Length: 137
Image: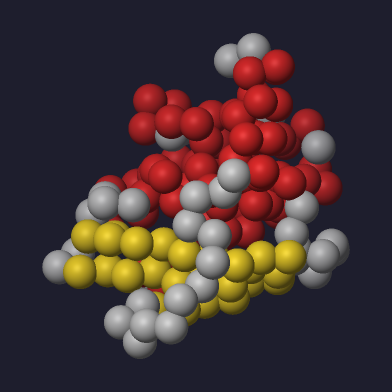
């Protein structure tokens, strides 16, 4: 994917994130993740019904990479089965960590395929993906 397109996708998901804003609803599982090396702090709520992720909400004090990665993740995982979501998450983690992965299931998340070149940004891209794993495991 061309670099300007990657930047455009990241910026759009940062400025107009999907799922932003927590709600009061006890049917959601909740989790929090913090990045020890920067300001990133994400609170997430996930609603799973009959093994399908129905809704993902978040609130964060975080950088553009972290927020855009969260928004992209929400688009990818909403309305997927928990098992399919785990497969997508595993492939995303593999991509970030330079291990074999299936790029065809990552959608817009492929914009982070070279994030390993900026080691200090890896945790930013992974934070929300680690957070959702806490709610669906």
